[in-house]
Image 1: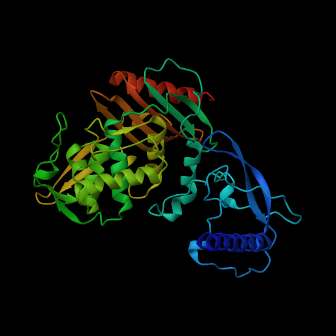
Image 2: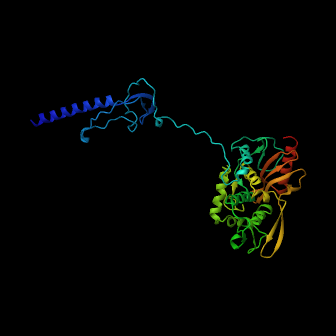
Image 3: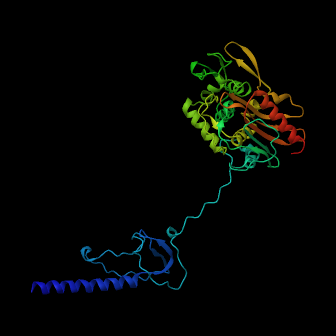
Length: 386
């Protein structure tokens, strides 16, 4: 008798499950086969998506213990998806079943901290391009390890050799430090006195500014860019109103804002060999420096009169850029650099006699005389019609 009752109960449950299955089938939307996906065992299973509206749902709820989990849906293992015939009507494709579309590359836009009045000329950075461009132009017998030259008016890359090799860039770093100061929009007229924390601690990093000198932010920016003074550069975080490490982080953020994708910086002076960049990236920094009203005056100056407010004296610092006296050449921005590892470096923007604006960067010239010879050879070649 007990066995008959169990048999009857199982038959009743099977009947209920059949009814529920039929109801679910009637309530389910039609599906279309989208494609096939490889299952864990290598078999191809059909993948489906719903098409057309589903009929009104039928309430067929059963106690949880009587309902078998249905092996349907995207959460089921591959190979367990049921294969239904497609129905007529427009196909509503589940975007989760399709490969993600590549987002179109967004155009570069000037950073918000850059003066709006200079946004349009700063779009010249587009001409610099992205890493990976092939070498361009003749060798010209240059000794520098990396070279990059771009005509800012036509947008043409005139010369490129190893332009995306990452190298230490020495004091070219100071351009990025000055731009980081400018991005904070500090009061550069505010007096500031140097202290022992502003003394460069790296071997070979000297300074012409004595500890305890009281001056202005303007003069510290000027000394850092014109004379390449390491003490002035080390004081730039205080000019910006930031501690040292947050200021270095700001330098890296500014570099990223300018599209300097292959650059990382570790100190404001460039004395550390962890200040790494490329010829292409440093060209972007030089262009930005030539256009920013807080940076361009010092970046382009032939000399800078540094005021010691406490002592009431003025010292004239002359630029390290030997191209300031070149005939028919206006310097819009320039910065030199040297360490034993980086060797002799330069980046700058010039307006030539015919009015063309040309940005030039050379990294890794073996000797100082090679750096200047390389730069003069490049400018002469451009003026001949490159």
